[in-house]
Amino acid sequence: MLEATLSALEQSARLRIAGAQSLEELEAVRVDALGRKGTLAQASKEMGKVPAEERGRIGKLLNAVKQQLEEALDAKKRHFEEAALKARLDSEWIDLTLPAAGVPRGHLHPISKIQAEIEDLFISMGFVVLDGPEVETEYHNFDALNIPADHPARDMQDTFWVEGGHVLRTHTSPVQVRGMEKLGPPLRMIAPGRVFRNESVDASHDHTFYQLEGMMIDRDVSVGNLTYFMKTLLGSIFGREVTVRLRPGFFPFVEPGFELDIQCLLCGGPGCAVCKQSGWVELLPCGLVNPNVLRMSGIDPEEWNGFAFGLGMTRLVMMRYGIDDIRQLQSGSLRFLNQF
Ligand code: FA5
Image (cartoon, rainbow, N blue to C red; front, side, top):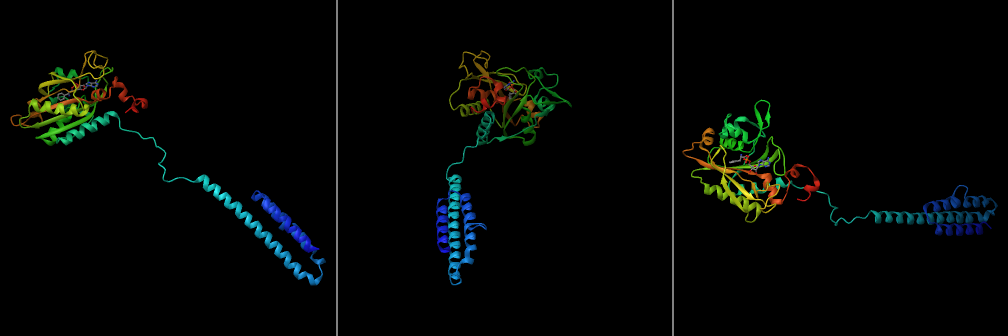
């Protein structure tokens, strides 16, 4: 009698185990069959009614049913756990050979790019790159460049004066003086940097802009040497012939002095806001170093001479990239900068 009950009980539990769809359903089967108040526990209460000679056999049968159901439950449980693990691994699988998702990267400002190109070019021709302070002494910015206090040339550049008689340097030319003082002749140097002028801003004038100074001091330096370096510089930056004109220019620290203008690459000549309708852009004033300047920095002008130039680097960048308003360059606008 009990034997038949056990067999029916086992069969029904096995069917439910096979049909279970989740760990929760499986647990319910386990509680119903093997729990303290489950069907197997109920059946074992019937053991007392089993004749004594049958008890051993039926007892073993009861244990065997219990053990087999436990094994079936464990097997099904493992099946669920393995399926869950596989699903998790499938969903988390990543292909390590795929390239990483793009991280947005910044890039150099167009002025920094051109500056680096010019530095490389001049370094390849034996020049050193020098740096100087942006807050400069009046002596280095003016006096040592042959511009004494009462000289009208001081008015050529509108100056920001700083307390204590210092100035925000109006040009990179004071670095010439520092180069001569520190290194002496022979000297081949360039000095890129930020300069400041107290003047009104328009499409081609900013109050803060970049220049790049150049100076060569040696024996027998000529205007021919100067024009060679100017041509090499422009050829390398523009990678093609650009139309230039050389005209006399006055700067107290050079004699003779020149203005090298470039034909406006924004309008191509007829005139625009950048070239002030003239078709030409002032870019590269230059000349042979005034003997007074050499003398003031302790260099004997009887033995040494040289050339110097002061490239308007911000304007060069405008010409190179076709930028029609200087104010864009320091606007910090990413819409503008992302184009380069
Ligand atoms: C000078 O500053 C001289 N120190 C250059 C020099 C050096 C001459 C060595 C001779 C020998 P100038 O004031 O012209 O020169 O300025 C040089 C260049 O800077 C100009 O040709 C122009 O390209 C640029 N520049 C001048 N003012 C501005 C401005 N407000 N905004 C942008 N660029 C300017």
